[in-house]
Length: 87
Image (cartoon, rainbow, N blue to C red):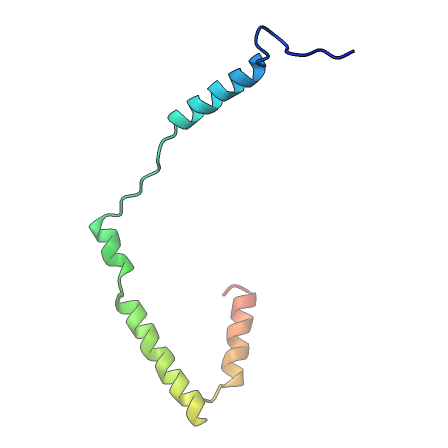
């Protein structure tokens, strides 16, 4: 047995309800907005810490390239122990 055209014109009422809900959700969509203050923008720009870090890294690169960079194993070991024991 086959049933054709459910309802008066073959329209599924559940599908119409689903379409209405989708249209409501699209119309109520709000856009997110972010505003960054001038102070925060200033902090994002290069600051003294970054320039000091870059200088230190450049000095270390030159020392490594020249072969003059030496590591004191005792200092490294002490730092590792301090880190491990949270001193």
